[in-house]
Image (cartoon, rainbow, N blue to C red):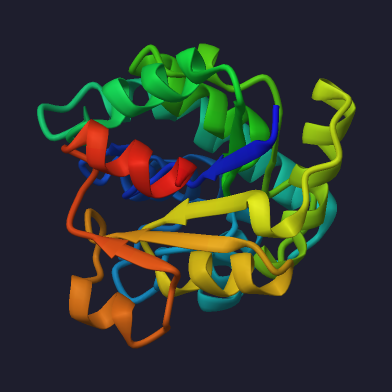
Length: 226
């Protein structure tokens, strides 16, 4: 193992068809009797903790650890039903690139996501992707996305017994926040325009590379392993 790929989830591996927002709104109604739109909160590239804090701020709820725990438990309980919508899907080329990386022999791969670990597992297991990832960094580790990278690299080292040099680490995501997160640890960054940002919008943030999607497995693997 000499190369480490760290994957974002939403907008990079999968599209959930708004499942996360629907589950959050349902949890808000069920736990606190609050009905309101979350459309003005920028979810893209954020951690679950950051999102919950913004939801609580918007609706004047007390941001206590107990309230966060209740809200998150209700949210994850509602995720499976919310994911059962026709727009929830694995994004182009994802299954193929994950298999290619797993079969490479010199590539380790984990997650670097703002989702809490349990939420990440629910989302990826729904699509049969969870089995690809033995480790990762999650929203449980920090509400600040730029603090997640060291957790992911440390867990990769613990799992594989390999010290991954920063220049041999790729952060793969669909938002400017993913690019910034990679830059914070000196990693290379692959931005994919399969979320809410276009290729041009991502290029402004100067990632190592930008692709419209991951559909061309051979080209993506050549980029990552070259």
